[in-house]
Image: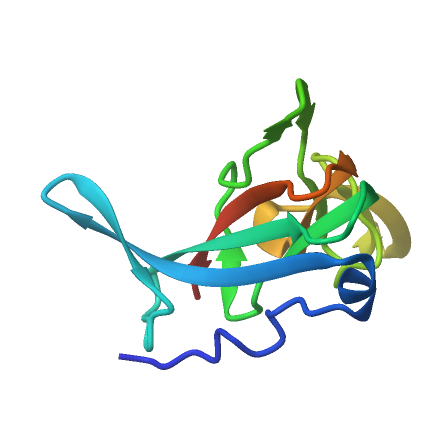
Length: 163
């Protein structure tokens, strides 16, 4: 069984979040199927290729008022790849917040399908083409909450597969 450094760089304790009074907790759960039902092992000590991990990020507004434009980001460990369709929209205050994705280390985000420009050789000439980014190439997922009330608590999640 291979041990993967799952916790490295994954706990999002951002100075901005602390300054805003936003509590964040990110935990991995190993997803197993036992007798046809999914069961979850919190903070698994080891994983192997093909294992599915569910990453749950819980955010709580601990400030004395509303927080605006709260970005909840789950990084996708490089030892894993995103399981397409597993990051669900968040229903909050009558609205739906769709997850956005990044393939460049969290520098830019967008809604699928994401596009990137690549250099290819066609007929002996190098040309630039726009291609669709595969979900396996995603590096981060993000939900941006327009407004979060004092004491509000939300959870977002996604699944990854161990490489």
